[in-house]
Image 1 (cartoon, rainbow, N blue to C red):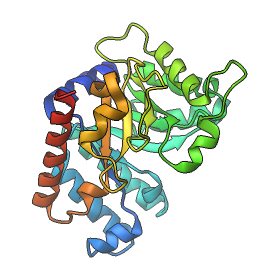
Image 2: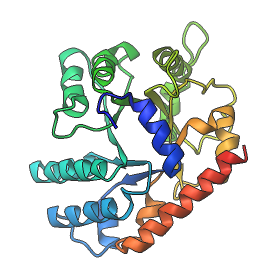
Image 3: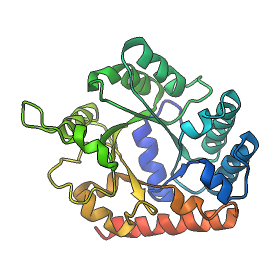
Length: 281
């Protein structure tokens, strides 16, 4: 796949080939302990390498949570660099879950860190926060377009605190979350088969019929598994946009480690359940 082919086109293809599953790489201390690993750089590397070796050649997307690597300083970031490179080499797309958000040159620097094709941490897409105003993301949007990458913008998150911002009503009568979705629909206008600018929308949120989720871009949907959402419930939550959903499962897969066969089997079960749910919608 060409590095300059738009992220949305690459994502659509790999989802169709492998099934629409995103597996999180979340090496927090309690999970390292469950795997019998020390909470140190060696444990971090063993954990990350095992996940990548187990599933990167079969799932559509891997989503490392950068904070769990950054907490170990430069050595942890080096592990993250290797994990990203190895996952992409195995054919998975990598969404860097860093939730960056700032203005001007600082936002541009964040974008350079993850979205420039020559950056050590170059990822296929990056999660970003728009709550300094959607326009603050302009440097990331521009660099993503230039390098065939994508963004996932926090729009309707599943954490209870998110509602006080995302459901707030603007003077025009539209909620802040709906405003973010509208911005993304404009970014993706006319793109085929799928735009590269997606939204983060929690799978645990229940009825979202009041929101127009058809942004012609992907919807990254955390919450499957340990947080209570199920593959079978995806059509009810996302309605006609369900085929553009990238459901994220973290603990539901990771708890089966460090056995690589068990990790593979768990990812394949989730992928098949999601595929069936989408096909039946």
